Image (cartoon, rainbow, N blue to C red; front, top):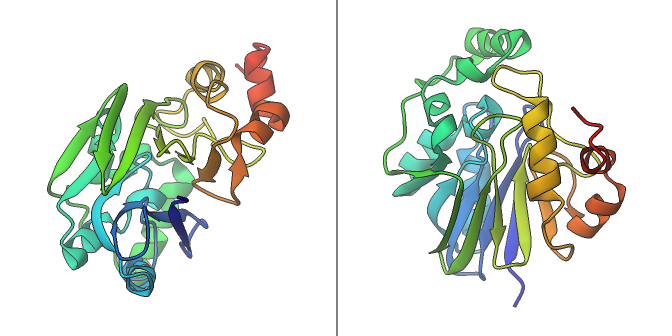
Length: 234
């Protein structure tokens, strides 16, 4: 049976927040609640209520501000007990400025001047993820793979062998940038060659920005994956 997959697109940076559940009326996992004003909670709540879903956990694909902005308010509003994040990006939950370049710091100042910024406190119930992990959550099977490059703590999550949430590691026809603090083009090349290009072609790709894709299309047509396989990316 196909998973229930809903998308909430954040106003700032067009970040995809994915809500994934085995069916209506079930527990779900919320992925990457991004930047809204004052946060993204009301938009996410609307989708949860529409399908009678109860969030069991928040999964963070990496620690950049546009993917973690609404974690704490969403956790508080919905009573979510667990937040999953790679150990290498955990500090960005409370100190997001560490992962930003000049443009990101300017954005934080602009948001603060216009709307005020929340205190970036570390959420409760953190489960640190590392190189790989397999577990059941909200009635679904998760396979986590560490994919450094965009950030050291970037990860992808394959769910029920049906879809893969890729954050900013992989987009439709593109990849996430590697020129921000902590980014690494050499790590990204290795990630694409050894971890992304080896994913099953039937998986639906749920990226951090932009439209969905399918792994077979990305392996065949994504120029960055092709360059990584040929050793030309880094």
